Image (cartoon, rainbow, N blue to C red; front, side):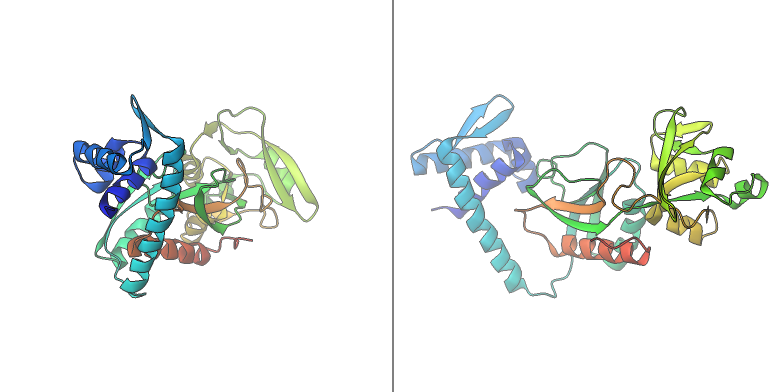
Length: 305
């Protein structure tokens, strides 16, 4: 039994291709393919159906993969335990977040300033990436989670607050009640300035407020920037607004009103760190997760239920 061949086979299945596995393992594709072929010959069965540009497991290959994967995971955990709890974070981690990310781009430099032996590769996209195929160690995702094969750490039950720049508020109409929002320019986070509504919750319950403005953007960060530049009111996640409020670039208005905690914009759910369930986590990845958890707490985000 050659554990190296088995490990390569498991990586091929996880990556979904010989090319992806070769990239992860830093081996020639031909070597990866040859190792799997030797394993199949040794076992006397075909483990993979090789189709152009894709691979699928045979019935026996699926059972073999499940058993091998579980044992390799156990071995990795044993090695991790042997390394000790004080393992120094080193190496490269790949982190993914939304295209208009604010949080990771702010957190990464602070994390790197603490952990000098760690490098971070950041992939920002609104696409739901295949974390295994793209070699993503950790992904930041908002909303409801659908992929049950992933492990998830819920950071916060997201909620949004209404903010505006001090300059805008100085020359704008008074803003004393939720009904006054209709008298203000609002920055719409969406595709159109027409028929936009904000769902807010306050002392009198929940209300859908029709809002209007001259600018609509599909990026939360652009909406935030437009508000800082004096374009009007903006409804943004509290964790994103908090640093701008603390710096004086924004002020929270109508502090008794916010979006319902479990229903922040679209889609609802909250803020999560997601990572592949079967992949051994390096000390660097674990340290980054701990850092993000601590940072969300310091920013005053609602704790995860």
